[in-house]
Amino acid sequence: MNYDIYFQNAIDAGRKPTLAPALINQVLLDVTEAAIDQIDYLLTENQKDLDRMDPADPKYDRLKLTPTRIESIAADMVNVAGLDSPLGKQLSETNMPNGLSITKISVPLGVVGVIYEARPNVTFDVFALCFKTGNISILKGGSDADFSNQAIISVIHKVLLKHNLDTRIVTLLPAEREATSALLNAVGYVDVLIPRGSQSLINFVRENSKVPVIETGAGIVHTYFDESGDLEKGAQIIENAKTRRVSVCNALDCLIIHSARINDLPQLTHILKEKQVELFADETSYAALKSTYPNQLLHKAEPQHFGTEFLSMKMAIKTVDNFKQALEHIAINSSKHSEAIISENADHIATFLNDVDAAAVYANVSTAFTDGAQFGLGAEIGISTQKLHARGPMGLNELTSYKWIVKGNGQTRTP
Image (cartoon, rainbow, N blue to C red; front, side, top):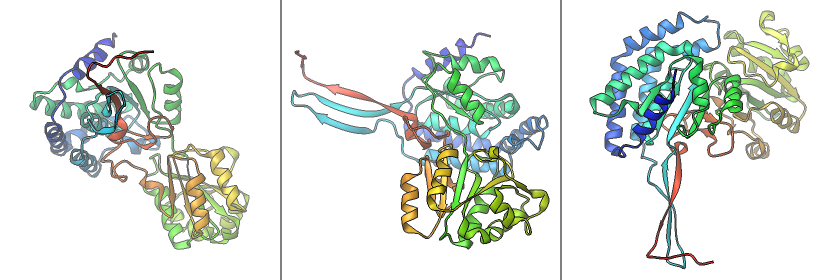
């Protein structure tokens, strides 16, 4: 199949006049209303995808839509509509001695390609954020979510047609693998490519794309329970970070505990036991849990359990003898996504927040908050773990670039 027609259509859609902010916001609100009105249809199509996937697959939970989740997605789109447009903002202004007026203003990135796996919510999120920022979006979802994605795109396109807008503003490519290859090589058509999914998908896109890539990395997430950590806070934070929703990238993967607090480990993991969380514990933590944690859920950790994104009801435990060892373990095993400390030691907290290299760092709070909506961004197109252009939850501002506007009165440059 010749995919260039899809890409050229996107270019053509982007060449049309910029839409008024009021129209953009009304379209987003109408898509929100249509999503709620079409819940039964969306759930029916989603079930077709679910029927093809093993419920034990870690991607199953991400694939699944429910009325509550659709309502939450709709609420995020309402939030996006309510935010100020990031376009046309004056970022700087300089008046040069030669009379030139030089201004830097924010502009859309252009054509944004997104490759993602079993995450139908991404279809709504990417459309909302790209539409609000004047970007054209080309989506390549996985075959495991194709019924869901097609249903969502059909809802969006109907709203665009209602407003006499070009439906090529957002394009869903065929689910076949050849479309992925075409998108990776769409030089001259696509301005930036954003992968959303497993580490293997992200690595594949980074290694094979000829289009610039913004990495939204896997979340290998740690929480360090310090010698001075509050036990009640710790138990609540660990439980929430691990079990709130295990298939998301901000879920806790490894609990690091100071050896001076090892006797508190049974209490810190008490709720995890009730929720059937499987633990992979090092020698010290295994001994501390052996008499209180169910045998079928407690295992001795192997080296591969550290630095693993589980995406399931599984968690590793690492014991350290001091604060420095905790920082070293995180530095070696982190994916630079989200890292947390539970401590009442102000110096340790300050050092942790300053020295740990991650997109989001936390003190005495669950890493479950690494989310565009929770950060006041309305929604997110992904959580970037790189340092070029964007880092952390990517909202409206992260979907813009800038250009320089230079005004003069006949000046010419001499050597």
